[in-house]
Length: 173
Image (cartoon, rainbow, N blue to C red; front, side):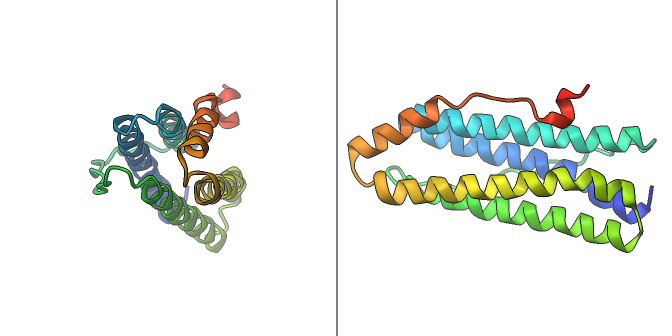
């Protein structure tokens, strides 16, 4: 495996685990606010991000490379009680950041003619498009429906029904 591609993929494991930490922090905020549906949504997001780290780890191992686990930074976000929009906007900004990281890995894989890595990364490119769409949708719904208690209750109830699904690259095991 190309060293540049390896370094970026190995670092992405860390970034995905940080994402899980960030989403657990957002889940904790919503739990403190009594919004168990939003808490559920972000706990599942945290699980998905952990799974993404495992997918990157698995890819390295399948390519005879040893993952090097790095220290995970503590999220630095702090939310004010009653401000339900800021965590949603932070989540969107974070997903856009992760998309840029995935694109960078793909770009380097392309420069280095690492066709296997490019094929592997296509799943993540699609996944990030979905993650950004979901984050934008949550913001739009909060703007329209979250301004009153009954609308917020309905949204919270909707997110309480979200169920975890194992990502397809892990389900194939």
